[in-house]
Amino acid sequence: MSDGLIWILAGIGLLGLEVLAPGAFMMWLGIAAIGAGLVELAVNVGFAWQVVIFGVLAAISLGIGLRLRRKPPPPKVNTRGAGLIGRTAVALSFRGHEGRVRIGDSDWAARLPGGVEPPAPGTVLRVVDVDGTVAIVRPLT
Image (cartoon, rainbow, N blue to C red):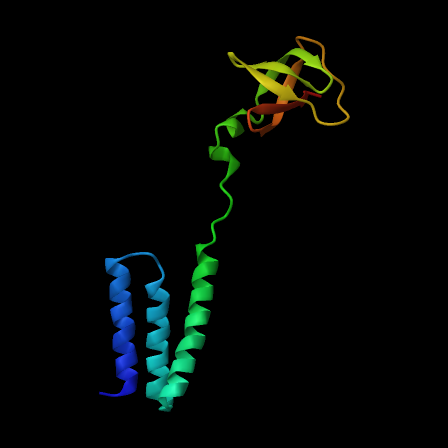
C-alpha cells in the first residue's frame, strides 16, 4: 500500500473519530491528512516532506477552523433590557443625571446622557439604551 493511501485512510479515520466524538478538532487534522495523501499520490515525495506537508496543511486547516468558530457578539435584540429600547418612559425623579423612570408598569433606575438637562417629574422620555439594569433616557424631542 502506498504512503498516499495510508495518509488518506488516516484522514478518513480522523474524520470518523470526529463523528464519534464531536469537537470540530479531528476534522481539520483529517482534512490535512487527506491533503497530504493527495499530494503524496500526485508528487511522490519522501516521508519527511510528507510530514512537513501534513504540518503545513494542519496549520492552515486549523486556522480556518478557528476563524470559522469565532462567534459574533450576541444581538442586543434578544437581551432582556434591549426590549426597552425605543419605549417611552415617564420621569419620576432625577438628581442630576441619575434618577427613576416608569416604563410600562415598572419603575427603573435611569440615567441621562451628557449634555441633557434633568427633566421635571412627569416628563415623557424615550429609552435610547440600556446599561445593565439602568435605562439610558432622553427627552422625546
